[in-house]
Image (cartoon, rainbow, N blue to C red; front, side):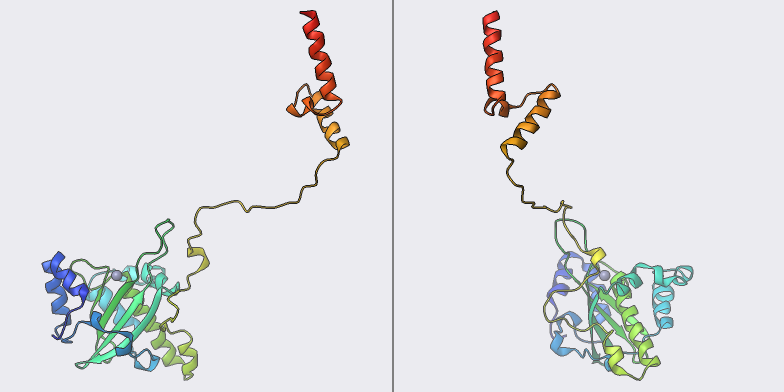
Length: 255
Ligand SMILES: [Zn+2]
């Protein structure tokens, strides 16, 4: 193999078992998919292998026992499909290698409602046959053994979605509008309900308050006084100031 990715080298340091498993997965390709860049991949919908729902069921249920047949009957309620529906599958490119179809994709993690910002995106690759049969797969969320995770399954559903569209329409523009393609800006759209809005804060409303007139001030202080209370303002606003001064004198005289 020409070269290994930093991910594969890191795996060798942290988990020998994981590194051996990873090496086994990619030996048919004779390359490490994580060394590929966007320039090495074909992002056109025409390039994707025809992965069907049956291919996904075989891979998730029969090959890897990730889900049971019963769970797969409601696959649209499972997390991977929700990820796909929510648009977390960012982009998927394809490369033909040694007779296999290699899919390389990125999946955004769900937005965490915390102050720690967004988690790093997950890098997924999947090896399939030309007819869509799924051979093996890997994701950067995996630290040890395993050939499936929610992110891999989400990418599979994105590919299956496009396969279905390709089979049902001849208008390639319609398909392209729904196929995850690379974003140029680095900013990824997420549903509003998943955005991290930070701590809730009352909107600050600025209202221009006119200064009180003397009459309004006196009226307010009189109401306060009538209720049996005093205000510090009464010591400087007439006629309250005089009333207080006189009251103090009387008290002193009595003493
Ligand atoms: Zn994953």
